[in-house]
Length: 390
Image 1 (cartoon, one colour):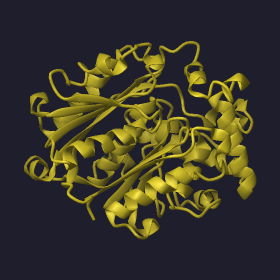
Image 2 (cartoon, rainbow, N blue to C red):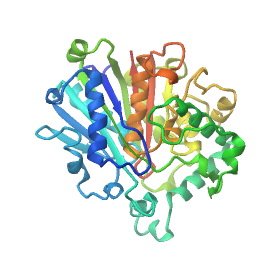
Image 3 (cartoon, rainbow, N blue to C red):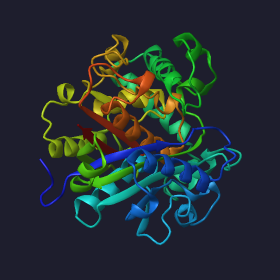
Image 4 (tube, rainbow, N blue to C red):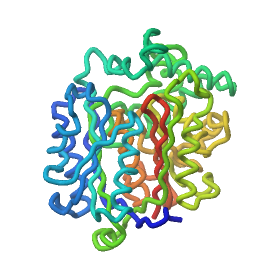
C-alpha cells in the first residue's frame, strides 16, 4: 500500500566514510566522500541531482554555527534546493523519510541524502553539549547527564522484566563481533561477556563497553522516482514504509520500560508497507543501539520481540547474523561507531547492501527481501523507522 497520491521511491546508491575518532578531514570533506561514493554506486553525477537533504545533529558538535549551510558544499548542494533536518539521534533515518517526501510528492526525481557528524571537536566531551536540551526550570537545575538518564532507563527496563546485565552485555559481544567485517568500523573487536562486565562502570548498570563511542563520519544515499530508478539501476531497493513518532519532551513522564513512540512509528511504517506480521515479514533489522540495552528495547518497540523477552531471544541466537532475525549485522553503533546522524543513515545503507546481496562478509543468509532500519533520539523521545524491500 502506498500513501494516497504518492509515487514509488527507490534507493539506488549508498556511500559511507570511515567512522573514526578525531578525523583529520573536515565535516565538508567527510560529506563529500560519502556523497561521492553514493553517486558513483548509483551511476549518476552531481549535476544530475535535483535536490539535497542534509542531516546533522547539534551545531555544537562540529563547533560550527549554521552547520547545515557550512556542510552544503561538501554535500554538492550548491545552487540546488537544499535543506537540513535534525531530530537528534533520529536524524539519520529521518533524512531518508524527508528525501522520500520530495520524490514521492512528484517534486523531484533524483535526490541525494547526506548525513554527517563530527563530534570530536567538542571538548572535553560531547555530553557537555546536551545540558541545554533539558527544561530550564524543571530538569536543568538537576544537572542531568545523558549517561545517567540512560542508566535509569536501563535499570527500569531490567527491573520490570527481570533482565540480567549479562544478557545486556551479550548485545555488545554480538555487535562488536559483527563489525569485524565492516570496512568503516571504529571499535570492532572480539570480546566476551566477562570482558564487557569488567570494563569501567560509567553509571551503574552501564559499563564502558555497553556504550557506543564518540565518532566522526558521514553516510549518503541516492533516492529516485520509479521511472528514473528503473532506468538507472538494475537492482533498485524500494522504500516500502516510513514512520515516525515523538513522545513527551519530559523524560520523567515517559514509560522507561517500553518505547511506545517506537511502536507507533513502526505501526505507521508497517501499515504503509502492508505488513501484518512483522516477525515473519521483516528478514533483517538494524535497530538503533547507542547503548547495548537499547537494541533489545527497540526490538520490542518494533514488535519484533515480546515485551521483556528480547534478551531471551538474544541468548538463544535469534538475533545472530545466521539467526532467524539477524539484528545489527553491520555491527551497529556499538561496533561501527556513532557519528550521531550518520550512524542512523549507516543503518539504512546496511539494509540497502543486505537486500542487494552486496554486504560481503557481513551478508546474512537466505537472500532477505525486506529489511528495517530504525533510529531514536531528539530529547530521547523520537522513533524513526524505514522499511526497505526488493
